[in-house]
Image (cartoon, rainbow, N blue to C red; front, side):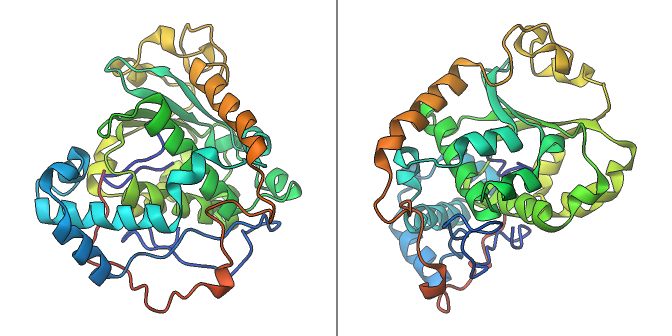
Length: 317
C-alpha cells in the first residue's frame, strides 16, 4: 500500500505513469482464476467521458491531486470511472472471497480505529508478508490485487463513504529482508501502488513507515520514484522501535503496545474488522457457478490491442 497517487489508496506494471500490464496468466502464483486488472482506457474514451462530466461530479480529491486543474481532474476521474466498470469494482463487495482468511493470515493488514483528525487508521505489516504461504494456498498476485480493491472499497464505502475521506497509513516493516524486494513481492508492491495512485487518489493524509531496517534506504531509492511527489511528502520513515512521530496524528490510546500505544484492542478485532468479516461470511452465498468472480475474465481472450495507456494521465496523492 505504498500510496495512492496523489493517490494512496488503501487507507504494478509501471506505477510511475499508472499503467497496468496483463500477464496473460491465470491469476499469478498458484493460479487462482483471477486476471490482472484491466489495462488503461484509451485516451479517446477518457476524453469523451471527461467532456460529459460536470465539475460537481468530480470528487475534490481528484482536483487536489491535479493541483486545481479541473480539466485534468475530469480526465483522471473519467479514467477511474472506466476502470471501475471494466474491473467491475462496484460488485467486489458482494463477491465471494475464497482466499480472505489466507490473505489476512499471510499478508496482515488491518483497519484499526480513527486518527486525531477522524481519518481511518490503516495498518499493513509488510514485513510479515509470506508469499510462499500464499502460494501454498493457491493465492497469486492477481488475487492479492483484487483483495486490495475489496479492502479499499470496504474502507471507502462501508467505513467512511465520504468521497474525500482519508486514512493515516502505518506500514510496518518489522521482519523484512532485502530478498523480499524481488520477484512476486515487487510485482505486488508495483500493482498496489499503480491502483492506489491512479484510482484511489488523495486517500492518505499521512504515511508512517515503521521499524525500517538500516538497509531500507537502498530499496527506498527504488520505491520512492514510483510515488507521486505529493505522496512522498506524506511519508515519514521511522527506525526500529521508534514511534514518537505517530503521536502527531494518532492518540496513543488508539494503537496497541506493539506500536508504542496503550490501546487494548488487538489488531484484527476492531469494529470495522469485525464488520468486514461479516460481509465476507455473507458473501459465501454468492459463489459463482463457474468459479469466477465478477471481476474475473479470461485474460487470454481480452482484446487489449486498442487499449492505449492514457499517457497524459499522471499519478498523484
